[in-house]
Length: 130
Image 1 (cartoon, rainbow, N blue to C red):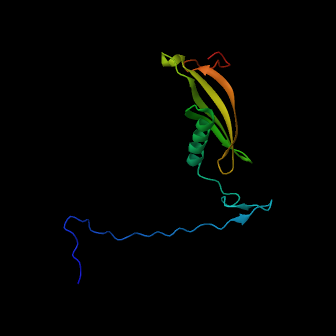
Image 2 (tube, rainbow, N blue to C red):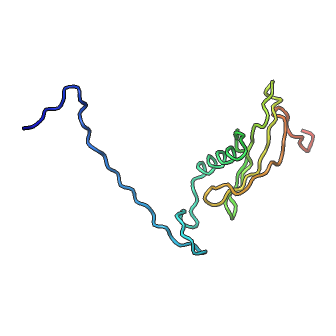
Image 3 (cartoon, one colour):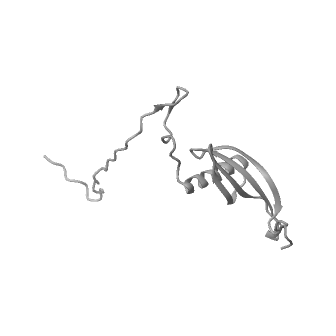
């Protein structure tokens, strides 16, 4: 004899199944296995910038406000990131820092250093009298 479902029981939904294909690890030149992208293939630029900001914030405890410059290099990426180091009132007196950030080809941070510290409201002196 079949049992009838209870009146306030939720109907069962069919289970969705997904199938993912995983890339098999491939040996690298040093004999270790690697699951990174094929050589010569880089992650999209915006993904690299987001990763860099997040990794720098994790290491320094300071939130990146903007990326003021970036370029691809033979080894990966080089960026300059603007960071709020000390908040002051008024905001134009807040202390900012420019950090040079180096990333490998996969977008992983390999090094950083502060190259400049300045007040938010002050422009750099420009040559040519302008």
